[in-house]
Every structure is written in structure tokens, then in C-alpha cells.
Image 1 (cartoon, rainbow, N blue to C red):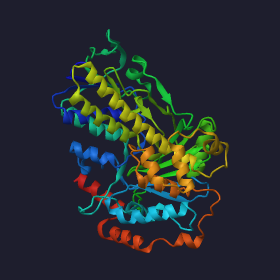
Image 2 (cartoon, helix red, strand yellow):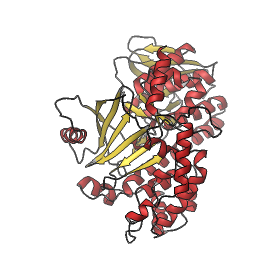
Image 3 (cartoon, rainbow, N blue to C red):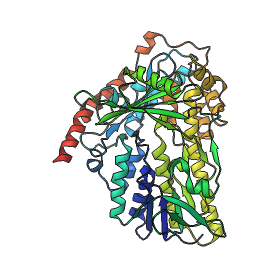
Length: 506
């Protein structure tokens, strides 16, 4: 592979324009072309993020005031998981930050005591600042800068975010071609040499980015890179979505809500313009019509009063994200059901590693091959670590009330690295040692795993659940400390969003 001077991106959407924006910012000498067809619609549902997106926008120099009002965006402190054990209870998966250091240690001690049989309540909601912020409908963005930064994510309109990034990239010299892809031409080495388009001249480049979605037109159809499905471990393959009205005149929690239903789970993502809502389910257990009916019944709406949109999900990953002179990002590379809102994080990390690779690529085939293998290995660890964490939500559930839940909890394959980790938790072993050994490179750290396993009250079935009195004995010092931080440094989420909208309008 020769030095990269010209780069072509096939596909727009959030993934394609994230890539174009980032590379145009940090590789100003790179000739970048992005090809997309306005005739091909994007999925464009309301989307959530992890705190990584905050860092990405800061790196680009795009202030929240510039993009959030346009994208109908709200802040995100974490995720509520409701009814995942079939008892209608909820737990909160927080975004951990430095302000949680002391209270989190109390949580870890209590969680370890609980899993070893002590009558100790250890729900994660009470020990992390973002849990208190969400409960009190406060924004996770402090009123004024703090010594220790609070981590948070966002909820936003994905189409509008792509539009913001598109304008940013074009301003920095990215060539935009609105045309339909016809074919990719390969050379004697099996590398792509040019892209043929329906109405425009062929586009040639040194390196190509496949952001063509599930179609994977370059990495899959042209180069034949194998897609490895995760269907033996994750059963959900479909989603039905609907837009629900938003009431901006009442308190607004800075949180995504994930509610387990009969054959999957419901997401509710609060935007300023609407509540993005969808039911992720397995088509092996539910038809499209049944999914619509259950979604409507859950939301207390009539199936005749709303417009449903159905999406098929291809859950899995390419065996190699980087093949020859092509790297796949976004859905062309991998997809895991959006239970923890990790899609953009994987895209962002892929772009970061690609950016580093561009700076290091040499004409030496041996050096380039080492770089390619290393990048693919990093992405393999990242995607599979996320996949295992998602699988843990199902493996730890106590639900057995439908054929779907019996399948995902009893007969679905548990990932090889996950099984000993869950056994260590159940058996009262040194869980932290297992975690660092099994997932040394995982994006999910100790607070996330403890929040999941303690939140699901995962334990040896011989152990009794804490009594109601024990559940009330929350560590009062931790509670008081976090509540004091809330009152001193944070303001109502709805008020902050309205102020941001007003300032943007002015």
C-alpha cells in the first residue's frame, strides 16, 4: 500500500460525516472525498451516546451551544433499566467520574458483601452522582466549571448531527458528491483502485472508507470480507420505532430508559422535540404486527394513531475491519443492539485508530501489514468486549415468563470470556481479579460491571434477597454528600436546555 494522500468515503450518515469531519480537522493535507446518495434515506432515529461523544465534539472545536439546539439534543447522565428481572423494578447504570471515587468504594464494598450472602442492599443508584442527577431531573452539566469534571453523554437527532458534521467537513475542504454507487474496481493486488458512480466521474483514492451501512459495499461485496454474526449469543434482530410527543413544560430526566418487554426491550430517548421510542425484539418470537401491538399497549396509544417504522438489524462484525486498502466504519463494520448506546463510540474509536494509522503508514508492505493487524485486533477486542457486556444483561436476568426470556436466559450461548466472570461473581470469588484478567482492554470498567451485576441482584440462587428494611439502609453519608453536590453545582435539566435554545435563537 502506498502513502495515503487521497481518501474516499462511501456513505454519509453519522458515521461517514464523523470520519470526514475528524480527518479534515487533523489531516489538513489529505484530499478527502465523500460520496453519498440523497436518494438513500438514513435510519435517523433519536440516538443516545456515551461520554466519548463529548470528547469528540471538543476535539473538533464544536461547542455544545453550536450543535445541541439544532439537533434537539438533551444531556444524558446514564440509563435506567426497568423490569429486566420481571419485577418492574429499575436500576441505573451511571456514567462514572472522579467525583464518585469515595462513594463508589462504598458501593463496591456493599456489592461484594451482598453477593457473598450478607443482608446488604447495594443498588447502584444511590452511590453515583449521575444517579442522583437523573433522579432529581438535573442536568449533568454543572452550572459552572468544577475541579473534577462530570462525565455525561447526549441524546440527539442522528440525521441532524450528521448535517452539522457535513457542514463542518465541507468547510474544511472535503469534496461532497451526491450520486449513486455503481461498482468498485480492483487492481491486480486485489485493492480497490476506483469507485464508479451513476452520473459522476469515477473516484480514485489511495485508501477507502466503507460507511455504506449494512450493505457493506466495499468491505463485504467487493473485498468479500466475512461477516461474523452474533446470533448464537444475541437473539434480537429487529426493531420497530415510533416518535412520541415531548412535554418541555415538566421536569426532564437526563437519562435513557430501557424497559424489558415480552421479546426484547423498549428504548425511550428524550429529545427536546420528541421522545425517540423503539422496541428491539427477536423476530423468531414476535411478528411485526405483534411488536407494534405490544409497543402501542406499553405506551398506551392506539396502533391506528401513529406511524411505525420497522428496521432489520444485522448483529455481528466483519472478521477484519481493515482489509487491503479499505476500512469499514459504522454499520458496515459491526453492529450490536443499542442497549448501551455504543454504536457511535465504536465508530469514533475506529476513526481515531484510523487517524493514527494514516500518520504511520509506510510504503513497506511488512510495516503496513503489522499496522493493519494491530488495528483489527484492537477493534476485535473493543467490539467483542461490548458484545459480552450486552450478553450479560440477558444472562443475569431472572425472567422466565415468555419463550423469549427462557431462550435468552437458559439456552443462548454465553461468551467464553463472560462465563468465568459471572461464575466468579456468583461464587464470591475475587471478581476484580477475574475482570482484569478476562477483559483487560474492555471499555467497560469496574463501576459498569458492578452496576450491572448488583443492579440485576445477580447472585447464587440459594441466597435470600435483602429484606425491605435492609433496602432502606442506604449509606446516609454517601447519600447526603451526593445530594449536596446536586444542590450546589447543578440545575434543572429542562431549565438548562431552554436557556441554551434561547441563547442560540438570539
